[in-house]
Amino acid sequence: MFWLRFGVIVVCVFALKSLLKTLLRKLLKIEKVKKEFFSTNHINELHRKIDKSLRVFSAISLFTLYSVLLFYYEDFIYLFFFAIIAFTILDYIITAFFEWKYTRYPKQSILTITEMLVIVVSTIIVIQFNLLGLY
Image (tube, rainbow, N blue to C red; front, side, top):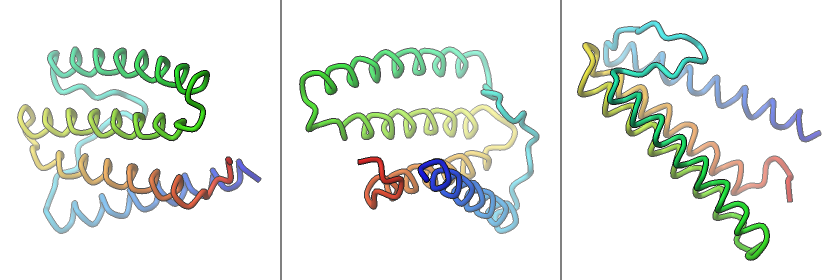
């Protein structure tokens, strides 16, 4: 039952994200930029270095936080989810900044911020209302 709920939530979030992107493209006249599906799509070399550093730092931090919370502070395990959301927000903000500052299509940053908001809000809703039934 977990995987069915998870699949429905993922499809709904993806559909909402796609709908909002399409609406914003039409309303704000944002050009469609071709991106590869599972690519990191770095804007320039500085963006690649910052993104790689953030990913390494977040992986080490999340692993350490999870280990400490799991073994010493089991009641505060929800802080792990807050850390994941914080690193997600930071990653999207860095990408949006580089899109806004260093590309020929600065309006793409609006779509990136919108995507970040949809993902973060949907994650918070799933956790808050216990939609996956994890605990």
